[in-house]
Image (cartoon, rainbow, N blue to C red; front, side):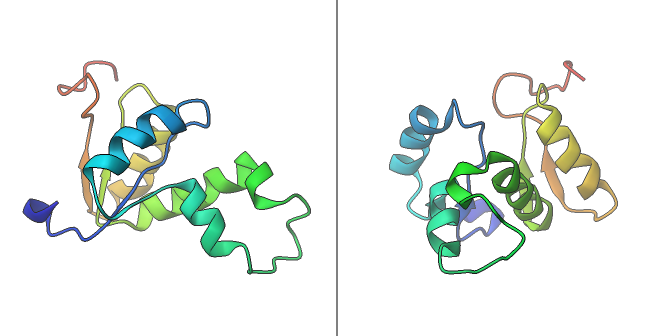
Length: 111
């Protein structure tokens, strides 16, 4: 993280992968945040349009996570993910750093 001058990392992943992978990330990176952190920080925020509790609405959480990843100074995605692809496309015009894949396709051959 020091090499990229980063002070924190936000880890977005599909609900079915979150716990196992998150446990690994959290033990290695001191300032790591995920959807649970997001939900905790937004729990007192009243948004009338949200009729379902945030922790039960994966769609809204995903939209918030995409916005975080779009605005971040760096985004590391995976080449086989359409979610990562959408964030990458949003970031192209912004000129921010994108690392195509750190999870198994470093040359981007899956695109």
